[in-house]
Length: 246
Length: 254
Image (cartoon, rainbow over all chains, first blue to last red; front, side):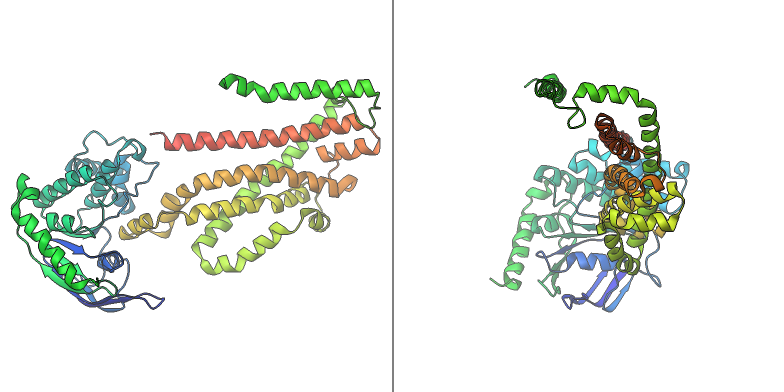
C-alpha cells in the first residue's frame, strides 16, 4: 500500500503547489491524477517517486524510508531516450545503472520490449522509431526493473490521437496482464475516464483533492463506445464545472 | 544551379582574382617590395620552402600542444563547474577576465614568467583558446535533459555514472563545436605570442618568418608566410570539422 497523508508542497519561491493531499493507493489499482495545467499533478508524481520531499505530511511506500533503486518506474511526457543507444540499450539502462551485466539483463530487456509490442526492434535507434514507438521503448524502460509502482506523467500527450488510442488500449491490456500499480497524470478527461479505475480530481493551485471517483467500466473492445464511458466523461466534466472558476 | 558548378565556383573566383592581380601588377609596374604579384610570391615560397615548412611545423606544434592542454583544462573546469555551483560562481568571472584580456597585453608577462620559450607560447595559445572549450562544454553539460537526470537518480546512479554515461555524452556535440573554434583560436594565440616574443622567443615559427622577412623587406616571402598561415588556419578548422562530423555520425547512425 502506498499512502500520502496530509502532504503539502511549498516551493522555495513561496508558491503553494499542493495542500492537504491524502490518498491511499491500493496495489494493482490504476489511479489517474486529473486536473488542469498547474494544479500540481506532476509535483505530486515527483513526490510519489521520492525524487522530491514534501514540505509537510508524509508519504509511505509500504516500508520504512525512501524507495529503493528500481522500485519506482517513471515514464515522462517525452520518451527521453538516449539518442546514441538502440532500443535494447535504452531499456537496459536502469539495470546497467544497478550493476547488472549485459548477459544477465538481456532476457529481461527482450521481455520488456516484447511486453510493449516491440519484438524485433532491439537494435533500432530512437531516430528510426516513430513517436509512439519511442514512447513504447520508454514504457519498456520503466517496466524492465519490475517496479512496484509505475508513475506516468502525461505520457501520451504529445502523440496524435490514433497513436494515443492504440497506446491507451495497449497500456490497459498490459496493466490487466501484469497487475502493476499505476499512477497516471493527465489533463485529459477522456484519457482519465478511459484508463483508470480510480480518478483523483484536483483543484487548481494550490492543488487539493476535489473529489475521487471509482468507475467500473466494461473491459474489452467496446469500452470507448460504451454508454458507461460517456456517462463518466459527463460526470467528470460536471465536477470540473463546479470547482473551476468560470 | 548545378551542385558541381557551385563547388568549383570559389576556386574559379580565386583563380580569376589571381590572374587579375598579376595583370595589374604587370601593367602598372608595381615594384614587388610594395605589392608582389602571385608569381613573385610563388617563387619566394619555393625559394624559402625549407624555412617556411619548418616554421609551419613549429607553429603547428605549439597550436597542437595548446589545443590539447585547452581541451583538458576546459573540460575539467566545465565538469567541476557543473558539479559544484560554488566552484562555478568562484571561477566563472575569472575565466571571463582571462578571456577578455587581449593576449598581446599579457603575452610579455607570460613569456617572462614561464621562461621556457615553447612552453610560454603554448600558455599564450591556451589563454586564447581554452574558453571556447570551457563555455561550449559547460553549455552541453547544462543541456542534459532533466528527465534523464531523474531517471538516473531513480535507479540509484552515482555521480560518476551520471557524468560518464549521461552528461558527458550529451555534451559531446557541444564540446566538438568548441574544439573547432578553439583550434583556430589556438593558432591565433600561438602566432600572436610568437610576434610578441620576437627574436627573444622561440624564433622558428611562421610568425618569426613574417617578422624576419619584413625586416629584410622581402615582401613576397612575407606574403608567402602569410598565405601559409591562412592555409594552416583553414586546414585546422576543416580537419576538426571532419572530426566532428565523423564522431557524431558514428554515434548517431540510426
